[in-house]
Length: 195
Image 1: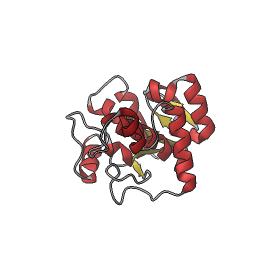
Image 2: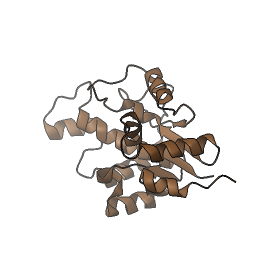
Image 3: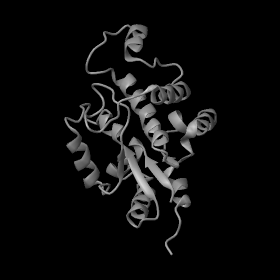
């Protein structure tokens, strides 16, 4: 059975009923029918929200998923980052985990500092909480794909051209273990038909 992972943009597409929403709903139905396994990285809950605020707790994220018909999807735990990840929904990192994260970061954001303290120094900002939104968004993008690879999923589903779909980035991420990186419209073509 193929294992698909949805990114933040897929959740947004469902919420706002954007162009890819129908394809994502088809993936959800295929998951419910047992044709595929569908997951969402828990780090999606740590993304900056439309109102500019962060979710207060992980239950708010689970409620959001339920409203979107995504309560049946598996939630993938990312690496623990203080002031980003939610307790009980993250993993303590070892060297191999950090090594993979650094490799993904170097492909997706080679111009951005990996550590927050280095980002703050390079950009002349105080190392503060809440985290700077640009660094936070980049870290979430990295940890979404990290979660997909670390949990040995097959198809990463995203419409984010800048982070995942450019030819050079895509081939490098596949080499790191991403399997396939697909748009929702091409991911749905990989779903087996029910017998």
